[in-house]
Amino acid sequence: MKVRDNLTIIQQNIEQACMRAGRNPNEVKIIAVTKYVTIQRAQEALDAGIIHLGENRDEGLLEKWNALHEQPVWHFIGTLQSRKVKNIIDKVSYIHSLDRISLAVEINKRATRKIPCFVQVNVSKEESKHGISADSVINFIQELKSFENIQVVGLMTMAPLSEDENVIRDTFRGLKQLQKDIQALKLEYAPCQELSMGMSNDYEIAVEEGATFVRIGTSLVG
Ligand SMILES: *Cc1c(COP(=O)(O)O)cnc(C)c1O
Image (cartoon, rainbow, N blue to C red):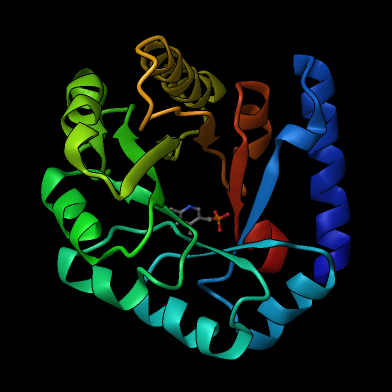
């Protein structure tokens, strides 16, 4: 399938999910996750009108970045080892996987500007998932106050691989509730206006529950 055709379908699905939820489709931005595909396919996505590209490994990001430079807005969406921060920090506009203070220390040290970050939350409490527990999010974000180069623009989560739509929906609702709790604190460095949630299999549910960034690989460029 052409990326353009996939994108048309996904955009229609997002519009319908927004209608069901009483949301404005303009609030939902699509990140094309290009980790499985070639530079050519990523370029095809940009030609189809995609603005945001996401990669989950530093090698993948650098390879694509070296070909596409600043055409897209770059998102780092994967687990980030502290020692890799310096490789990507000047190339990305957003980091979706801030999940520990040691990583915040490294981002803060290497950054030459404020970096928009998502705090990754393990809402579903699966052992295999990265991210901090929902119980510790508020404390964690309060600890970030002294990091002048970190702006907490939102929260990110991954839903469990489940056939049960309710399990997935509960995960996204949990993230939305945490966002409300954080916004109520009115922290200047943590406006937390964005929610990064939803992938190929569950983005429509995520949109119904308030996603502002969906991260889609397989069904868009795969
Ligand atoms: C791979 C990946 C995605 C996209 O997954 P698909 O199921 O292919 O849409 C989204 N988010 C993260 C963090 C990923 O690693």
